[in-house]
Structures are given as C-alpha cells and as structure tokens.
Image (cartoon, rainbow, N blue to C red):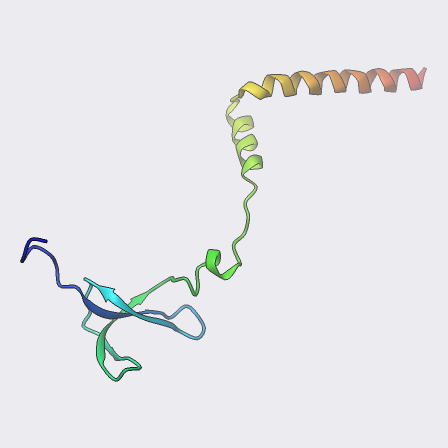
Length: 110
C-alpha cells in the first residue's frame, strides 16, 4: 500500500438503539465521532449510532413480510394495458372457458 493516502483506520463501537436491548459491536472503521463510550475492556472508543443493524433488520429477525410480486406484476400489466408472451395464450384459454360456461348456462335454462 502507498503510504499517506489511506484514511485512519481505528477501532470504534457501533450502537443500534432501535434494538431492545441496544445492540453494540466493536469493530474497525474509518468513521469517527465526537461521542465516546467505554467498552467492556475498559478502553474508550468513538461511538457511532446507527438506525438499523442485524439485531433490528426484518430480514435477520425473521419478521420480514413476503410480497406477492406476481400479483403486483399482473396488476401493473392490466393498469397499463401491457401484454406478455403468455398473456395471449391465457386470454384465449379464459375466452374458451367463458364461452363454455355461457353455453352450459343456456342449455340448463332450455
């Protein structure tokens, strides 16, 4: 590595206060802070507060909601009148089923 071109890389403490209890981790970073904290080893380190971490992110906590992306795509296509390659085959099948249902109703009425 070239000397004197890289930022200072030092130990810091990241804290996620949205997690209960607050999640803290000591790691190395180039970020700094005016705020400091005393870590378990008795040393003082810069404290960086973050809004989300692995302790509070829905993906890591198992509270992530699954989104029906297929339904969203179909709704988008209907809204803007877009058709895909499979849409024509699906429409033809639906039209055939609708015709058969109408014929079945007419024969039961007669």
